[in-house]
Image (tube, rainbow, N blue to C red):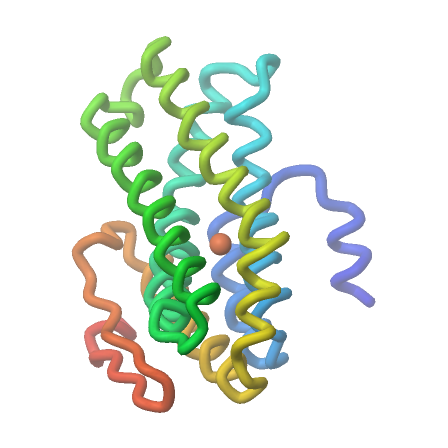
Length: 205
Ligand SMILES: [Fe+2]
């Protein structure tokens, strides 16, 4: 209940520290996998809404773009390494196609991130940067909508409860690894297969 009132009183987006703490809580509470993914989508939406808002200032957008990419790295990479890999190996064609399509969309988002980093968005804010930031925010917004309306339902239909629980645990471990490392692209979060989680020790540093 205390958390409920804390959420009611919230005025701004969750800080990365709050996101980090929520991972521990969700792991301890055995939060279900799909509601957990949706919670992380909500964290992303907090920045997407600013990036596509005509009224937001350049400074707000610049600040949110960095937050947004940190969360895209965390959620996106953990999700593709766990959920998408599992979907891609599913006996059902419908599930496999969802996994491949999701991966393509993530690849596009990461490509735009690389372009924006190359354009120096952290130190300057130009019209070209603002336009590309809006494109990547819109792409991820639609991607989230598609996942919540279609992919997650297909995943639930084609996977057992045990698989969902294993994926939840693996996903959270990967999120923690990606979030605590501010150069997420340099860390190896380990291959993950159902029942044989092979994360390396370095991942937990
Ligand atoms: Fe997602």
